[in-house]
Image (tube, rainbow, N blue to C red):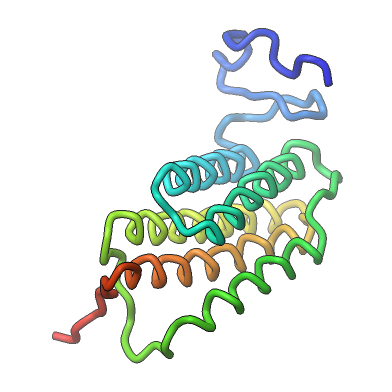
Length: 180
């Protein structure tokens, strides 16, 4: 593969636009660019989570997710390009089902916390939800790949489950909401 970015400082964005992979220039305030930024932030939060000690089953799954998020970003950068398929959504569902089998049913709302790594998983979940909303915002103007929209929805579910499991790891406990 050739060099994708041979020059990092280009000054081409100084006028408030950015380039899509198609060569088109759009405003940095465009919903498509905002969604790409939310995906980048989501992937960065996953990177922070992966920098922590994690059970291997989570590490393996989240490593795959990081690559798929780049694929979603590619779909945004190249309107009409499709990289996410139903099988990717099904993989998230499979992980969610397998991981959730280790948890008791919810009786109260879960608050982010329990441990630093669990809180990071919940922060990642919240950013996944925002990224999903950003994709729907783009979709309202220009239809996106439905599988990509479902992927972000399932990812937030998976991150909630992982957050719960990480809070309970090593004898820890989830933090639950107490009604006033």
